[in-house]
Amino acid sequence: MKALDPLISDANVVLLGEATHGTHEFFQLKHRFLEYLVLEKGFSIFAIEATQPEAFQINRYVLDGEGDPEKALAGLYFWTWNTEEVFDMIRWMRSYNADPAHVKKLKFYGFDMQSPQMAVRLVEQYLARVDPDLAARARSQLSAIDDGYKATEFLAIPAVMPVAERARLVPIVEELIKQFDTNQEPWSRHTSHDDWEIARQHANVLRQSVSMMSKEGFATLVPDRAKAMADNLLWIARHEGPDARIVGWAHNTHVSFGEHFGLPESGLLEMGGYLKAALGDKLRVFGFAFGQGSFQAKAMLSGGGGLRTFSVGLWPDSLDAMLADAGKSLAVIDLHSLPKDGSAATWFAKPRSSRNVGAVFDPSAAWSIYTNRAQDCFDALIFVAHTTAARPMPWGHSQPAISLPHASNLDFERGEIGDTPTDWVFAHGGEAFGFRAALSAEKPHGGHASAMLVRDPGPNYGLRYGQLSQSIDATPYRGQRVRLHAWMRAAPGAAGGRGHLRLGVVRPALQLSYEPKTAESYRNPVTSEQWQERTLEADVPPDALRVDFAAVLVGDGRLWIDDVGIDALGPIVTTAATH
Image 1 (spheres, rainbow, N blue to C red):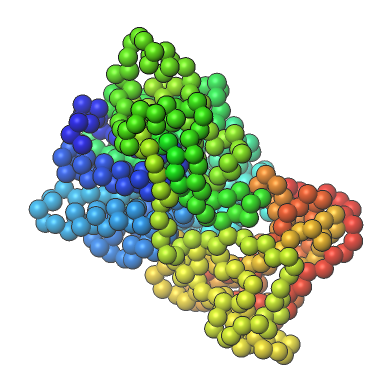
Image 2 (spheres, one colour):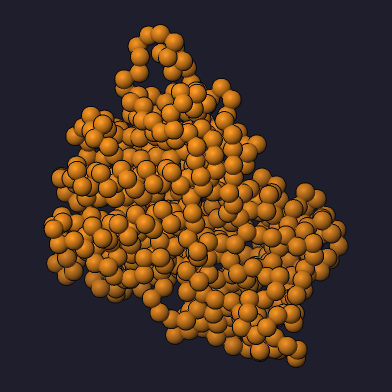
């Protein structure tokens, strides 16, 4: 590692990329990098591409050993980091801090902003300490996005929350931030300046999230996120003081200081570009590349979705293939020291393709490859000739949508009491967020059992929801309007809880069809302890792949569901809104 010292020099921020979000060797190398920079170069801050408010839960474990690190890792909502490699790194960070010889402690931060729900909760909790009336108003105004289900579905599905309605959240949050700034002195006295500063940053993350979701289109959403992540990392640097030295972890796309990978010749920057403008020579960026091998990623919805291992060979005439031809199993290329003339200079002078795999992979998709000049994106490139897939943690991952040929076990009469219902999928990493699903002996209309979703009160991590779902082949319903109906009841816990019935249609190219009627189920949850029938309708377009339906539990308590049915009502009359 000492050979890299000239590349690191006196940088205050070192960004480590990755060509995929699921490569074992990349993660191990980045762990090794962190150890070296901490032990030998005085770095004390680790920051990762994960939502900032939730990452404070891991920081508490790293600093003081507080909490459950496995659940806290799953509580970041990023399956990409919910791996043995990242967990091993977190445990190393805790071990480092537990050594009394290490007076300067190592801290864990996130710098992303895609999930607003924890930011809402933490802002409201702080306001309750300094201005209860303002806290009550904020709770009412932001109730549409104050938990994982509403934040995910309301901000993602136009039929549930249209763009204009989402945009109305922006001035509400702007006013909250104005209140933070106006009252900085009295609020800081009442709590502490550190508490005020962190709460104000949570409000800023909330502003970033709702601002991004109030727009439509890749060309606006992605650059907004890039700027926000850069701003959040710079906030970490300011918050930690002038001597802060930070190791950052994200995808190659984000750490690059060149033009945006997905929007060539647009003039738009990625996170690394904004940081380069702010930090100059105090920033070093290491990109990653590989020749061939395996990685984990989510399959496209058209392929059934879900996390799986992919294997790829050399990409012809690519940067990756050229580096593989050099015969090195592992190499670091200083891109500032490329030859000025000769064949190598000529070769590197032209844009070259390289693999660029994010959370979702489709071997045929153009976006799985980027074309650029490496020296325009990174200070150095780390190359691994052969890779293997990262190793997922045993829990905290959503199950893939397994498409059945037809609906099955809708009356929950198959299976044993206490077991997960046969032919149903318990999704969204349930156990990691405190949920469980089982057959219950309770039955509204006689018979053997119903299905039950449960979350008991206690120290739960993240703000997600439990879901019991089934996916069926859409072929028999194509061109038809369908109705989903089910009997449901709830027993909310002391902290509140509610149930929802969910219906969606999966189409090619990640398109999900929803009806305005579906939006009513989000705004009219099941909270009664009396059994009641709920219905939803949707159109199944001629190109539909799957019909998905589910029962969802949000918060603490119990939700029962039984006697589910799905019926074709006849040919489509109106066109469903799509997302």
